[in-house]
Length: 320
Ligand code: NDP
Ligand code: OXD
Image (cartoon, rainbow, N blue to C red):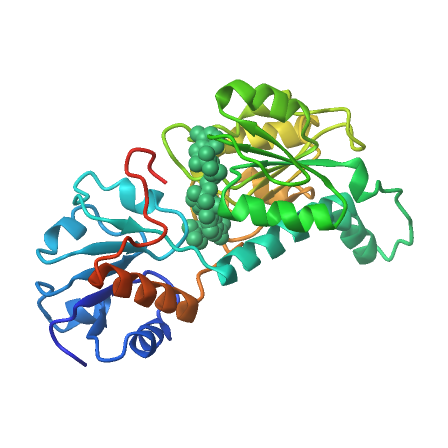
């Protein structure tokens, strides 16, 4: 193992393979994981680049030579929440591999609800042969909240399947085939035209708890299912789970697909587990591929060291 790393991987999950991927992408660099450094009492004074996921509060500020912070994922809420975050460039992960995985997950969830797959799963268990009439894609309006890198890619895939697609972002957007809405002022109009809501919002002060009962009641009830579907792969902090539970019980929501939760892992006693029409996945909609992440970090380090502006820098004012 090399000493005095200049690239530190503060990795909390799926450790295997990540260090090797970074060593392959950054030949000649000294790369170490935080658990290894701690286990071997290695000094972190030379660390210039840290790749992190939920770093401990104050940890990044304790690295005296740090130049750049890389988020292991597309979201950065797990970094910007640190009250002692040093004033350094923060780069998030944007990559076709990650985007493709999110598109797969979102399309799968939209189709699961459209084609009533959960009901067919039950019928299969019961050996019950019964056809349910379902609408076609073009009869539904999918509203994507958070029309950024991931939202736009999902929109393209959904358009190709024939869905009507609307997008909502903070700033005005234009995207062929998509009706776009911008800012809080346009939120009511966006929601009123949404049969299936897909949230791909980052977690910020403005988006915390935004997926609540008031919002569910503002969604369209004139679509083929007469009640809306909620799909959230953004962040669990944006959803109010007691409101989702109640809305699923009383029919305010027709169904839901949730990949992210207020508390992760989702506690065993959460009532959400029990709803047939609530699809739960364990924050895996778009995992970061180790090699793609390592290649992205290598490209950005090369830019930084050449004095160029890095890509995918986080705006500290906006927090995403
Ligand atoms: P982007 O920054 O590219 O897009 C975020 C979008 O949200 C932008 O369109 C932005 O508007 C919009 N937005 C932010 N705040 C508001 C607001 N207050 N009101 C309206 N719109 C707002 O991020 P990505 O698309 O790359 O990723 C989105 C999120 O997806 C990540 O932050 C992360 O939380 C989540 N994620 C989840 C994964 C999973 O496996 N479950 C995997 C990867 C990401 P504007 O364009 O105007 O700035
Ligand atoms: C991410 C995530 O932000 O996996 O990339 O949640």
